[in-house]
Amino acid sequence: MEHTIAITPKGQIHIPVDFRKILGLTAPGLVEIELTKGGLIIRPKKSPILKLAGKYKNRKPTAELNIEKIREKIDYSSL
Image 1: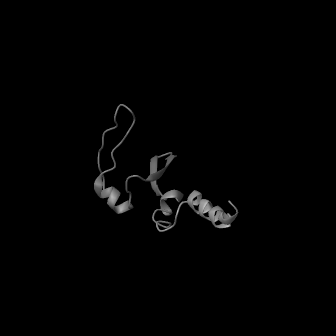
Image 2: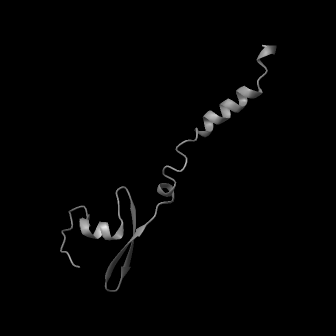
Image 3: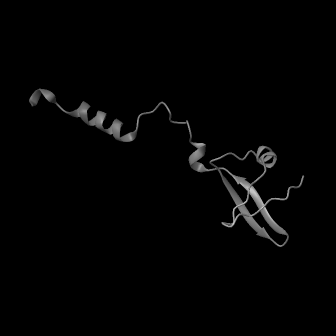
């Protein structure tokens, strides 16, 4: 499979939709790029942050948890 694509004045290229589907590339996303004697190699790269997406969706933020723990330890009867 081959495509001819343009390079923008900013040095950007557009990866064709069929290539993105085959490689599983999504936006936002990351790719690794390697310079070889024959040209460039572009490989999908999994973001460690994006891997966590949705993993903790039902958990409260840490700051909120810490405040709740502190409130549980306060003896309000002595105030």
